[in-house]
Image (cartoon, rainbow, N blue to C red; front, top):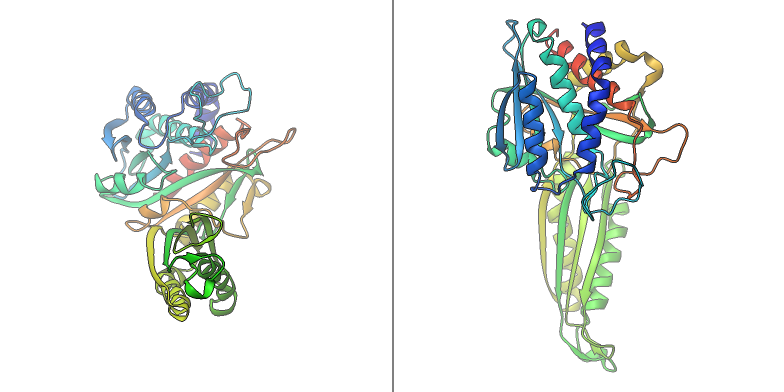
Length: 391
């Protein structure tokens, strides 16, 4: 089966590069992926995959029924949306949409999903079970997975694979991570209400800015002293607003930020821990407060069995020197984790790094990939899918 998958993928390689370049030149922002979805649906239909459109608003679902007796349904998820970034790559197929760019590799992800569907559709007679392809919108705003789930995309699914490109891994290599791959990402808003007064007489007022400073400093210090250092937490206040003039003590201050965590227990306890700390400071200095903690997406926790399947498929396909066991998780977030609330799954890293020129990070206006990685990703996904039904 592996040799067949490789042969088909190699034959399709020029077409896959053509697909990727089309997608890259025509990026669409989150929840606006109308043309991308239509293009995806057309490619899927042309290779005999059953298609459902407008799933998860602008998402697409493709389903391929194998001829075997295995009843288990496997899903493969890839995302489609771009970022509000002006591209600076000077590629011939650079974005034609001003201020919009596939700077996170979702054009590659979509191509991998299509390529895997194209390969497996040619092997449908040999497939033991069913496979569902989820082409998801709005990953960049961490909404698309929930929309897809609400529209039934996970009904009947018993396992799911996902992939994300990574420029720090050489192209044609695969990164495997057991356990936590990404962090839970939540949103935080803190409002401080003091009392205004003259800047020359601070004792007659309650200085909201000074209290906000105490809150920020104490939050950062308290993480290192009160939270388990083996359970990483990153709390960043990214914006602060307050005050009206240089000589007026600010009464109201608003802070917003992000909270990242890896361990489920820490994630569960953070809202109350933050509120208790803010309350103690504000009560000490006579201010009022409001803490608004919004749960985002949980951590991606790779299932050990499915991770082993992906590792074995990768080693058999590429040999040990092209398979990297990732030693540390990322504190970035991924709404692939939402699917894992409904079925076990695993996401792997696909190396896309160049060997002969600079590799810019994800979300950079000069981000670009080595297209040799596309065939690697397609073979890895297709062969891992086949091995899933062999367990």
